Length: 77
Image (cartoon, rainbow, N blue to C red; front, side, top):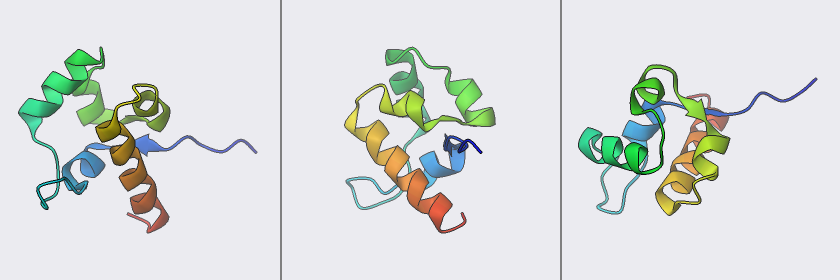
């Protein structure tokens, strides 16, 4: 049986630890980041996106988000 790819969700985006010591990224910055990478922010908010989409950007923030999502899923969240 093929493994299902991890879907990174809005919940992950809003709960990822950030450098300031708080959690979550802002909507305004998210819209700009998604536009810069040619990704559909609205689709992400509604349905999430595959981890591979974020990994393909090579962006450190995206990679941290994927790692956070993996940990959350492992904990059942």
